[in-house]
Length: 299
Image (cartoon, rainbow, N blue to C red; front, side, top):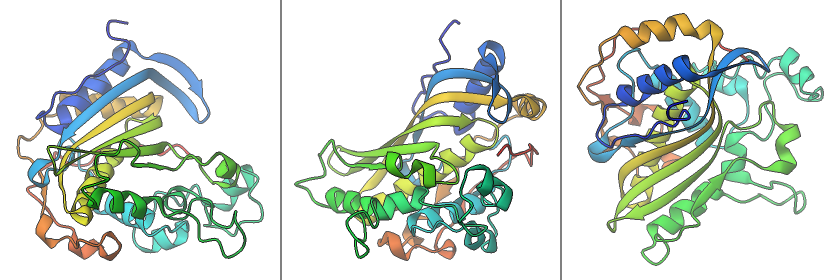
């Protein structure tokens, strides 16, 4: 391989440039493998970086990103919810298949009611270790702790402001072990927030565009809560793959022209308490896109 599948991002590029370059690299150089849920083309190791200044959000323009669906999932994470049924009732159905009776039974979670996902992302963000110290133990609120450290001038320069969803003792209780499993915050230039995240498994066609948008919005939300300004999102991606049945749609996406208009969040409308943010507070301005691209979801 010419570059071992590593994509080094240039700050200031529109989101599509880096994403389309990653697709091209995988299609040309990826190793064909038979995965857990279908044939894939894989590269190991990629990185993307997105400018978040002035409210910028990494939304693709070469296909429509259902950013409100993405937002609903993010707010569900933030509140620590683990019910796919609750999320589905809010119009976000991306966890329905994982919470089905068939999927839960296949994971050995036969005692879970349909729709219960176990201690997935939001649980770990807000209640890590819940119950391990006794029935009254509320667990560790990692997200609140991170915001508190970032809000204090004496602690915001720490290199330990990390939120992890990879709780080894809980993995077998999860309907799906976390794909994006760790994120870290760093402050530069006194008041600018950089989020770096690590993702073990990356579905480029469907998952990655959501992850880009979700962590972009999360960084803005945390910056607001800590009295900072969002500067950059950096994504470190491990097993980066394209499903075989996504190739036609992604090939079409490569041929599309992207918009040079940068979508931005209306930051003033977002509450400074992260627990108070509701869907109606979040407005994205200037989002232009080339329309839908349909791809099947692999569970």
